[in-house]
Image 1 (tube, rainbow, N blue to C red):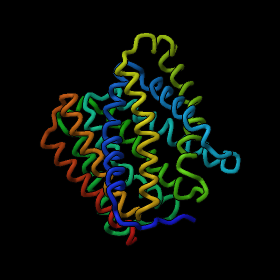
Image 2: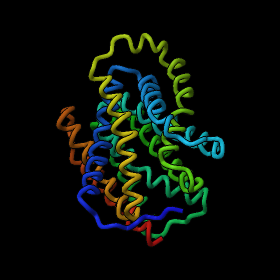
Image 3: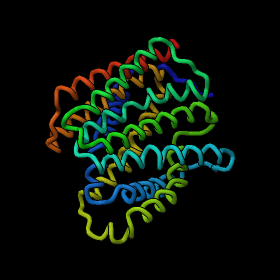
Image 4: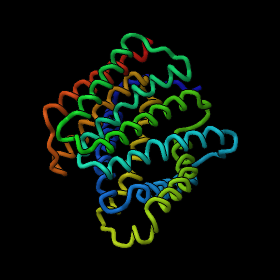
Length: 293
C-alpha cells in the first residue's frame, strides 16, 4: 500500500498545484464554450474518445477489476460528467454551476455514512449543513430563478461525484488513477454515444459547422483537465498528506467565478458571494476534520 511521503512543499509542488487549480477552474469555461456549439452529450462523447485514445497505451489489463471499472464508469461518466455538460448547456451562469459542483464532498460524506457506515463527526455535520445552506441560497437567488433545471443537473452531478468518491475508497489499492480515468472513458464512450445519437440526432450534423473555439475547448477539457490536472493532483497526493492537499480545491470555484466574470461578462451578486462563503466554510470544515475523524 502506498502512503503519502509527507515531503516539504517545493517550487515544483506549488507550480503543480497552481496549474491544477487554474486548469480545473478554466475547465468550466471550456465546457461552456464547447456546448455553445456542440450539444452536450455529443461534446462529451468527443472528449471521452480523445481521452480513450491517448491513455489506452498506458493502461493495465482491466479484467482483474472489471466490475469496479464498469461501476465507476456508470457513475462517473453519464452521472457526473454527463450531467455537468448538460448543466453547462442549460445555464446562463457558469459561476453558479462551478459553485454547485463543490457540493460533492458533502454528498460523499452522506453516501459514506449510508454505504460504508462511516458516521460523520459533529464538525463534518456542521460543514455539510453549511454546504447545503449555500445550495438553498443559490436556488433562490433572483438572477438564477430561471435556471432551476441547470442547477438541479449540477446538484445531481455533484451527487454522482460524491458516490464516485465513495467507490474509490472501496476500490482495490492496486488500481492506479490513470487506469480509472482511462478505462472509465473507454467503457463510458459507447454509453454516451448512444445517448447522444438518441437525444441529439446525427453527430455528423451536430459537428458539421463548429468553430475552432469549440475544438480548442474540447482539447482543453481533454488534455488539460482530464489528463494534466488529474495527473498532477495524483502526484501531489502521493507526495503530501491528503488533508494538506484537498483544501486547495476550494480555490477552483474562485478561479472559475473570476474567469466567468472576466471572459463571459457574468454578474456576481451579493447573494452569490454569501452562498460562496457558506459553501467554502463548509467544505473547509469537512476537509480539515477528515484527518481527526
